[in-house]
Image (cartoon, rainbow over all chains, first blue to last red; front, side, top):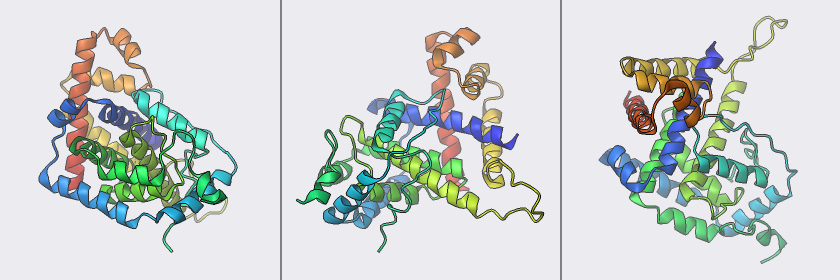
Length: 112
Length: 184
């Protein structure tokens, strides 16, 4: 029974995510105008990510390590609600060998 | 550029410089999309720090492990990176759950209790919000069952305009729920 709640929530949020990605700009602005505090938080998160990201040469080396890894992929695509682009990007991730369970954790630990 | 440096640039994929420039140039609308997607993904975990998830997604995307196919919108790509990271975090969290005291007792094949409780509470609030809205409840039931939009419309007799309007109300309800979660 507990698992059912998680699965149902996943279905609802997958539909929400698909809509958020596919809605046109006017609809996003009309439905989701961000509060000032959220705008500041978004900018802070993006800037923080840009600052923490490894330099280009380091990124290239890590990318090459990933490219050499065995291709293992099995992905459950949500049946309902999820958007077309979400399915396409998931398919694209499968092509790269990325898996559903975030299996890049070791390679993605970039903190020296 | 040596062999290693070339290996992460696949045909049709962005270079790190292109990805960085695209992230720096995100429109205000796309930033709002990312905020909503990060909050949605955090809610599944029962976590509240959506900023950390978004930041980590940008770090990992720029690290080059996940090439950005330029035919895919950047927001959709970053959403998928967030999904992958959240999945990773959930796995780590599940491993931290202590094993049963009785060694003959198999660990439950259920998700961690906290996440289940969070899901139950969120769904309860959502259903309470729409208790009087038959169209949204029909739509929710369709989502729970994994129906496509045409299947739900066929089952319920909703016209496309009715379905779209109900979906919009549901979307606003979910958004409100995610924002309230952040404030609590």
